[in-house]
Every structure is written in C-alpha cells, then in structure tokens.
Image (cartoon, rainbow, N blue to C red; front, side, top):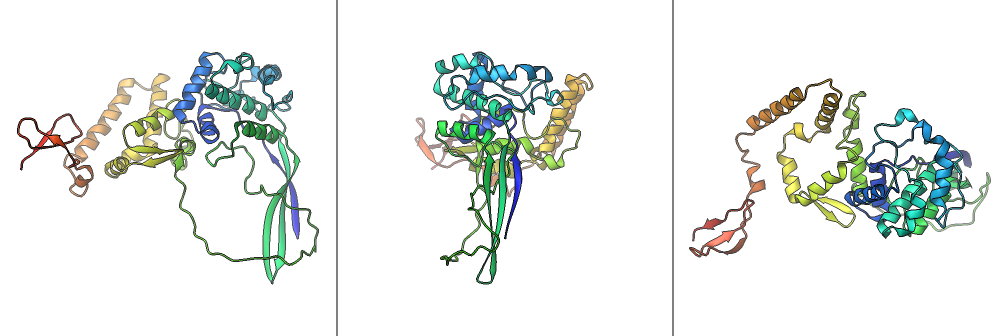
Length: 376
C-alpha cells in the first residue's frame, strides 16, 4: 500500500544577523564573530545593508525595486540564470523593527570580484538568500509505502520532486561552496525526514526475495553545540517561560551574541574544538556555584525590557539601576560565607613554576599577580 500527497517547501526567510551567522557557521565554518566582522566590512564597502538587525522582512516601499536589485547583484554569479522574483513574501512592514533584513545593495554585483574570499562567500550567501526568498516554492510529492514481509509490516517514506523551485538555487550555492548541509544550518521551511526517493509503487506489487538482517544499536546522547546551534539556542532560550508580551526574548541580541560567545572562550569557560563548543572545567565549576536567579534567561529578558522602557521614557534610568543594585546586594548577602562543599572547585593549582629568588622555596601560579611561597 502506498500513500501520496503533494507538499510545498516554502522559500526560506531573508537573513537577520543571527540567521546569517548560523548559516555561515554551517556552510563555511566561520565563527559568529568572524561572520559579524565580514558582514560589517561588507556594509562599510556599501555592498550590503545594515547587518546588526533582528528583522527578516523588508518594508513595503522596497517591493518595487526587488527585481532590478536581483538582476544587478546576480549578473556575475555563474550558477544563476537571470532569476526573477515570483512572490513578495519577503515584504511585510509590520515585522520590520529598527532595521530591515540583510540584503545586498545595487553596488554588490560590481564589487563582488574585488572582495577577499571570505567576504565574497558571505556576500554570495546573502545574494542567494534574497533570490531563494522570492522564488517559487519547492513542490514535491511525499510518499509513504507500507510493505508486508514474513507476516510483519514495514513502512518507508520518501519523496518525488515535482518542481525544484528555490531548492535548485540553494543547491547550486552549496555546490559552489563544495559543502554539504549541516545540522546547525539555517531552517528552510521544508519538512525533513522525507528526503529519500522511492521507486514507482503499485498496490499489490510483489518484490523478489530480499536479504534482511537485525542489528542491535544504541541511542546517541545529544550532540554538542556548534556555534550555529548555540546561536539558535540563545535566540530561543527560555521561550516557553516568557510572557507573550515580552519584546526581547532569549539571551543577548543579534549584535551581542557573537561577543558573548567569544568572551566565554577568551575567559576560559568554553573551549572551541574545531566546529564544536565544549564546556571547560572552569565553566562547569562556575555554573555549579552561581545562584539560580542569574542562570535563568528570564532575568536577561526582564533587564532588556527595562532598558527598552528607559529608552522610551516610560521608566527612569535611576529606578532601573536601583533594581539591579538591590538584586546584587541580595545575592552578595546570601553568599557572604563560602559553602564548604563547593570550595574545592576553586582551589588554586599546586603546580610548581619555579623557585623564589630570595629564599629558594617553591613558587606556584595563582589567579592574581602575587606569588605564594610554600615553606619546606
């Protein structure tokens, strides 16, 4: 038995900064900070619009110039054949905040060949995302086949592509970058899990004998974060706990998330292992001792909302800072005495790094700029 139904893979939305950083990490291996730096350089060269944005749409007054902009920016891309927009789903002024989505400018096409390789790769991603976002949907037929063998039923899922649509352009970009999809990449709007093509099937069809085997397997633990996956987690952290009226959710903003990650790495709390981010012992120890109030995304959201209220004149700056000061005093008072069980987590290293020039005793490294003499 087989069932078929037609589905639409909607085009992806335009890039905001976080989405661009995630996709560049998945496709190019760039860190969030590198992508921000390259995007900023492209902005200063007048090749793209303002990159530090959290919007993924364009205002209504930009609809008329999209076709010309795409023609100008894609003329020198070898894998694009005169694409023209066929839908305007990227236009929605109600979803534009301080700055609209990241798109190329009319100068991008002419400047492309003169750019450094990394900047050109990021620019190509932004150009192709614009083309994909306004292109036709990816149309395919989802197939579910149920087969009987040895008195047991087995099911298989697959797909038959009817119209490539925007997928053809996205595939061409990935081929030009010689890369494969990465699980930390950007969402595309298409359902996953139905990627395998199945042959034409007919009700009651009988297949010749097939070889089958049973093997024992084990489930895998959740994968470690890539920077792209961590950016997504920061963007949605604590979403189920937020009030629906909360304007800024998650951890950080598109403009600050890369800096947060880099600071954690430079401070020794997180280690970068190729594409993966791994917690260091110092980071695990810090999380163990921090008060629960500091570890929740809700605190960040409350402070961000407070800053917006100050910006809009609805809250006095002194009142906002007084609330933070009160919380700090409360936390300091609650932690005035060390917890014996946690003290060993921050014991100083005992490794000897040399001899004292005055007494000859061993000298060990400390976290502050003083030496400690160990008496013999």
